[in-house]
Length: 235
Length: 363
Image (cartoon, rainbow over all chains, first blue to last red; front, top):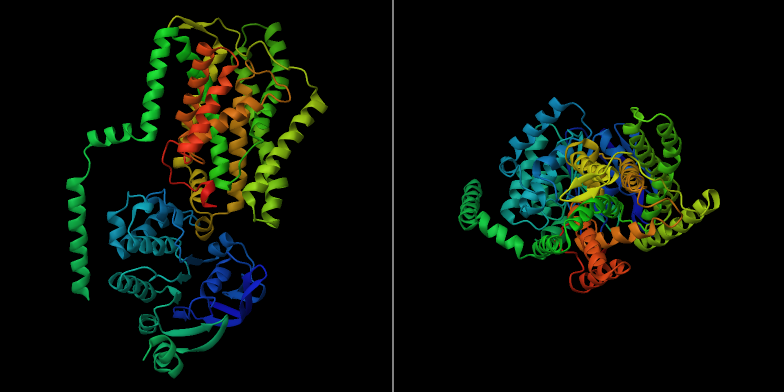
């Protein structure tokens, strides 16, 4: 098991957001975490990636406890987090951003290889190599963030709302990129609000409501579930 | 869907082409820059410098260039602290003081040795050792400050960070000034000069060797600093943290280490300025106040946290002071920059260079 979250509680100071959340991600899976606004999806990812300290429970990555570790140490263990706000280095060029993504890799040959891999995945980034990240368009920024996350060749990719603020066509493109990554062996935990598209693309999903996991199962089965159809798919 | 995707690609590349064709030529770019706030100020500064040099003599230009470089170094450190850690450093002058004090105590025996054995290798290298000692001492002091004060504050409370840091740095400054007075006394601890060589005539003005060396130290440090920030891995991590702290954590950069480096670099630069200018400003408890004000003028002039802008800013402030001193008399040189800063804060609070870095207003 690659990632196992057991009875995790988390929140911001006195405000507890997550209550007793448990789920797991197997090697090579493409798992989605879906739910309404304010359910605690982003908080879950922030806690796993070490930007927030969990208030209780365990987070096991490859069998090691990573709950409460600082963000940069979690990253060095092989977890890449792509946040909702993307956190790009806006005054650096696309290439510099990508190179910073490979900060944990010391071998320059491996860095160059990863850079090639990312440029292959997103040829658009190669075209914009020398441009400042702050001048990219919304879709390019998402690609940039995913590419930066991939530069460290993580074993687990946490992706927060890649479709946020994108035109439907670009959303499809981002989903296609994620599926390609998954086919090439990356394990992905995806947080999304676009439930229809997410369930079509992922293999398994968890539904988070008011800080608790309420449903889980195979994506196709969840798409037929009465509750999911009524609340999220609207038919 | 694939069809639609190619369509969008074609559409966007067409837009790119249009962008390129209507893109500005370099002449338009230059005129655009000249009429921006930064351009107007820089052009005016150059004009004032030329007119004043012709009217009063070239010593204005020489004085400006020599002190401006050192003020720029101070301001770089201050801007760095602000952009990376969001600290408004009001104790920066005290690192200047600590640098000059260290250099004084290191230079004492070296000066005596040089007096007894004139013409040795030490006459050239000795002052450099003193300046280096001042720099390293301040870098070390900076690291201690970060560990003992700011790290503890960050661990406990991040609310009202800017105001807390402002108050803490003022407290630090009081402690360091009085510590100096308690341990080393309040008298002036100065030297006659670093390099005991005859003055060099430049443009008809005799300039002492110390001033020339101070200028070259400033220029070399700026070049070195630029190279460090742009091309070294450590410099890139500092830039990354200043642009996005969470983003830096997400790619595996230890923000803690970057904070230590930033403090060492920033305080080290202040110490370098203090040590290099020991021949002009002898070490005494409040010697750092004037340099501190100068570097704050620069920071406000160019925009908070703008590291690169601090360099032209340093020369501008130095010019204003030199010009005021020679036209209005001694004592007025603090008044005119303050007036200028007040106008900038009222009419252009983000500084004369439009910066995209995080500023106090975003916090």
